Image (tube, rainbow, N blue to C red; front, top):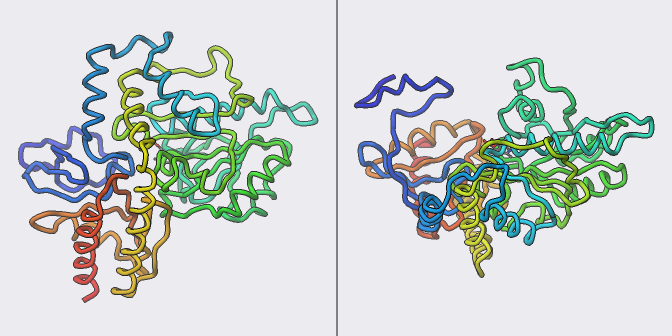
Amino acid sequence: MEFNQYPVNDLMYITNRPPLVFTEGDGMWMTDHTGKRYLDYLQGWAVNALGHSPQCIQDALLVQSKKILNPSPAFYNAPSIELANLLTANSCFDRVFFTNSGAEANEGAIKLARKWGKKNPNQAGQNRFEIITFNHSFHGRTLATMSASGKPGWDTIFAPQVPGFPKAELNDLASVEQLINDKTVAVMLEPVQGESGVIPATREFMQGLRELTKKRGILLIVDEVQSGMGRTGELFAYQLSGVEPDIMTLGKGIGGGVPLAALLAREEIACFEAGDQGGTYNGNPLMTAVGVAVIKTLLAPGFMQSVKDKGAYLRGELLKLTEKHGLEGERGEGLLRALKLGSDIGPQIVDIARDLNPVGLLLNSPRPNLLRFMPSLNVTVAEIDQMITMLSDVIGQIKK
Ligand SMILES: *Cc1c(COP(=O)(O)O)cnc(C)c1O
């Protein structure tokens, strides 16, 4: 494929993309190479917590880039210390290791749990290393995180898998209990499964898991790469169920659009020794300065309440749409929501909405019978109304 002045075939093929090059972004809007504007309900896959190129991120990048880019991970830098302070002060965790992607944070969580399982062996004195994960879960695209993921087909694409990730069913405590043996060291889950179509773990399940893992002496790891950083209306989704996990990973929203992620653990779990973990770019001040700007915005008085309010408003509008067009309903938490279409019209909606004129609408259909909404956390009511009007027109066209 080649279009206009863009020889796109020099990029390695990994997925099908529309013949558009996005050149500018501002809040909930993006502009393509022809100048057409799009209302963006993907936001880089729930990444742009504050929308495209917000002022506070521009400022953080400019200010920090004039000070220092990279003192080396062998030395401390101020933004990473400040961001770690803010994260631990506002969560149940004590220690933070910064990474460059969610998958890398999850790799770190897996390594930390295995290290802890080595230090805390079973009664026979053997290492514990198995981490129970869930069918349909998504934890990233490295070999270990693909093996941990429960995406259909992912067990065979790059076989052999990294061993040690038996799969249970979300919201089925008995299915977890059945898999626990003397090699089990942890249970890892997304408090809201994102890629599989926005499926929240129930409060009862989260509480049951915490009780079960405590009783059996194993760790509870939450992958909050998508659900964390205010997305669900709480700063972290584990707070929705009132449990305190042992390890958490963050990504996506924490960098508001730049590559930043994190691994957090409680003090007694943070057992890495010198040389166990590291990385060239990990915790670099340019990215962590952005993280500081993002979390300070989320922590400002009233911000999280506004996310809750906007989430409730979006939910109400999606329910009205459901009624109007005879769809199946909606689900989700805060500003991570899905519309259940009742038939496999998701991909068709995505294409038609994108090609609307004069302005397009960018939507995501992680499953053919579902749309997922991941607006910026500072989306306005007017921008929700505009999306609903456009989406209603598209569904009306298809259902005619
Ligand atoms: C996106 C995502 C990841 C992977 O993050 P990357 O930054 O793409 O490596 C891991 N876990 C969950 C829940 C995610 O949504």
